[in-house]
Image (cartoon, rainbow, N blue to C red; front, side, top):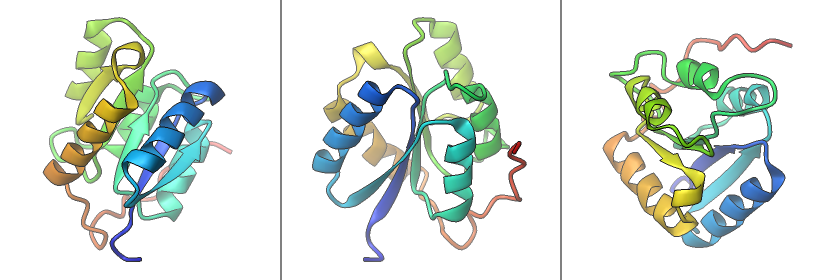
Length: 144
């Protein structure tokens, strides 16, 4: 069981979240897919679980995906966990900003299949391997 990787999918749209979660469970059978609908829930799961990769929507009901990204990757040049931003925004500048802020990759939902996303997740976890013993972030301040 120690070989199972955990991927946290933070996405508020039920249809989109189910699509990616279901496909990733099939494509990445060696991974557990955890789901969160809000930024707060996602950050709480990140604090309480060993997470190997985060898939993050930029538009969440309770906070900006950029706020979540800043908490997950406080130092953009030295991410402790790979974050792949997956957004419906069609603005290249936003995607580039997410990458500058520490996202491994920023992708547009309508231009990426779950199969392609699985490939990027594998690559992200190879490039930025999480060392469980050192990946504990300082307590994240999550509003109640």
